[in-house]
Amino acid sequence: MTSDRRFPYWPLLREMTRSEILLRDQGSLLGFLWTLLHPALMFTVLYALFSKWVGKYVEQYVAYLLVGIVLWNFFQKSTTYALGSFKRNRGTLMNYRFPREIVVLSSVGAVVWSSAMETAVLLGALLLLGQPPRWGWLLLPAVFALELALATGTALFLAVLAAEYQDVERIWDVLSSAFFYLTPVFYPLSILSPSKRRLMELNPLAQILAASRACIIGSTAPSVTESAAVAAAGMLLVAAGLAVLRRRQFKIMDKLLAR
Image (cartoon, rainbow, N blue to C red; front, top):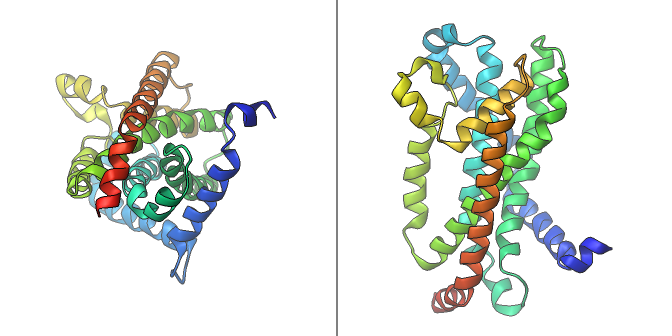
């Protein structure tokens, strides 16, 4: 009851998230199976291309690559899907008054659902491959919360920009493709030179991947210092994104009305 008083829009957020989940599968014969097809195909291609070269530097490369793909997919899909959330919900925004960030949060929430299913499949695949459960698996929700904050903050900024500028979707498509290769999804940072490695470690998603791999296939716990730094960056990004959205919400409505 207390949480409802502080934020009385939980039922609306829940229903809009549910609608977004259904909308993503609308017209699809295979539904959620399409969600699994993409990472499966991505894994097959990357493993075929890089296992002999990169695999010799990484123990349990299959698990290493699977973790990277699942977490990367969540960040890329959630930010891309939320980017077009204002345009997609134009009618609702025009006819009802509620906090505009709910539109973005529901879009991210829809991808959280599919990513949770992907993670469950990932853990099941690891069990089938002979990977025993580890105590670190219990820390996965906390690590995922770090990525959720990072993705949500990025999504808020992208949604505002996309509502005001037509080319943001194409620009983000290019930038996220480049960001994929700058994130250790299919390779370890250890193969890079020290100077490049230090630069890549500034990427918060790289720290999240490292923490997730430590939980799932590593023998040590994730770094508390690095995790705290990523948490602080994520919360700061969310707060900044909310501030920008609330400041620009009337400008966004004017842009949507003009289209």
